[in-house]
Length: 169
Ligand SMILES: [Zn+2]
Ligand SMILES: [Zn+2]
Image 1: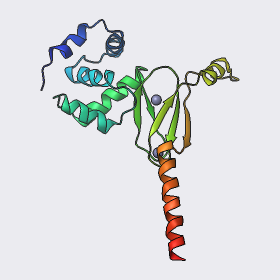
Image 2: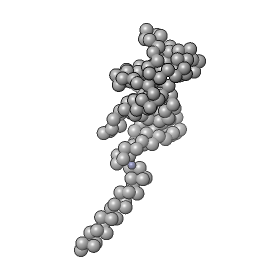
Image 3: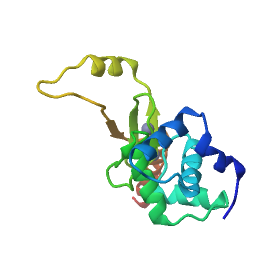
Image 4: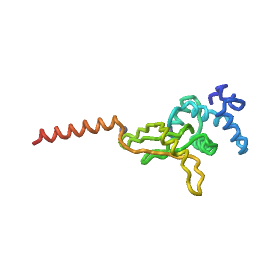
C-alpha cells in the first residue's frame, strides 16, 4: 500500500470537494479510510468520463491496491453524495463523471466516442421549464449520431466499395 502523505491529509483537507465527501461519510457513520481517499483523489484528477475498469487501472498505476468492490462501493457513495453521475449510453459500459455544469453528450454509434458540448440555449430552456406535479433535479441529454472521423472513414470505405464494384464490371 502506498502511503502518500497527501492522501492522509484528506481527513483534514479544506478542499471543498473533499469536505463534501467527509461530511457525507460523517453524516452516514462511514469511516474515512485511505482507500476511499485514494479513489476520490484519482477521480478528482479525471477530466471527463471514466468506466470502473479505467478507474481501477488508474488507481493501480498510482500504486494503490484497492479491491474492485471497494472501488464500486466508493463510486456508489460518491453518487449518493451527489458528487458523481452515472451515464449508461446505448450499448456501452456504464460511465461516470463528476457533477459539473449541465452539458449535452454527443455519442457516436460507430466508434462509441462521447463528445461533450455546452448548449447555453438548451440549458436556459431547461432551467425555465416547469413540470406539472414534479420537481426537476437534473437532466441528461444524449444525442446519438456519427462523429466526423467516422463519417469520413465511412465515406472513404463506401467510395472504395464503389471503385471495387466498377473494377468487377
Ligand atoms: Zn465515431
Ligand atoms: Zn459528460
